[in-house]
Length: 130
Image (cartoon, rainbow, N blue to C red; front, side, top):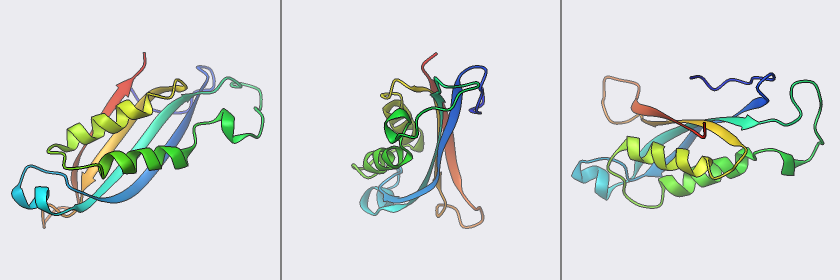
């Protein structure tokens, strides 16, 4: 199930990519003690009542604010030690579903500095209201 805009279904795609935080994430002692770079990506399928043919009012209140999305994810990621990237991604995904307009959410959590010979390791989770 992908998160794409779908006018016929009345959905728009809202995203935050490359949100970089310093978080305590992992099962190893050094990961518990020291924050590390974590990169978060969020994709939302958001109900668009004006699709497929109309234009809605040019008002922030009618849309999911990606600034709020980023702030929420940042607060969750930096709230304290989390052992698993999966847990962090699930917490962020569930927080996004608190907004009734969000129908589906996909969250990626990457740890780019864990293994020297790879660009990044991580996980992607998806949660849905359906």
